[in-house]
Length: 360
Image (cartoon, rainbow, N blue to C red; front, side):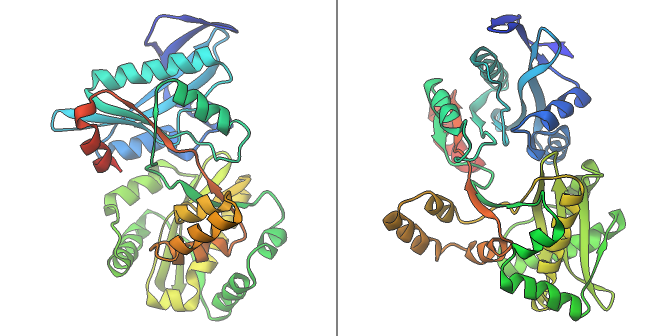
């Protein structure tokens, strides 16, 4: 563990900015209440395979514990860079520690010729510390911005018996899951040899739905790096794969990140059955919630709005291409949540407008 800055004083004693090793960092992320899959070392390694440079920074207390920290991703292009903490930093309950961390992140970003530094705290607007964190970041001169990760999502509580989880699904979703089972949809856990099949389904889904996908090597790396807290699930009809999900879990939440299905899979309700199996897997690992990832942000805004504004936002969401995805996800009985915005510290204002559009 290397020290990156001179020790400073906090209300609890001397603190220092350090670069922890993988094991120390991941243990800290897993124990932190704001810890996320996207702050673990494996996420940094995955993004390194896609052209980002990962750095881990943390605040070390006098007793050897870590108080705060961030996995920082840096991407270089045309002699400049952008720096980004996905679902981070992980803050302390100590302003001195947080100030030392933000200052360290900014110094590293500047040394890499970053146009701006973007922070994206893993806090939803309904959490008790959200307002104070938002205010504190604004007081440090950071600018609120749109997020790179989905700002609005659906979280399903899964720290309860399987029967209670299933009963929380909509009537239609429960019927679709049972129909898929009656019609012979079989779900099996895949391994690395099934990655080409998964990729073929993803590519066909992307072409049909008009969205971009990662490379086959990226999905293979994602599955391998997070083992055993990643799972590839394939739905088959008569031995042929018709749908597939690749899901992940951190210490608290299952994460639904990548999925696809062909026409036969869609008609058979294979995605509904796969999601149910994924939720059961995450619950078996001890996760307390299952994050269905992205929905139209207008619906996230509507969840906390008054009646008039909510109606307008819900009308606006009708034109969002993610509306069908939302209907699928909401049927699993979760709660709509909305994260805090991203926060930018700008180093090169003349290039900021161009860079923020590209990273977004």
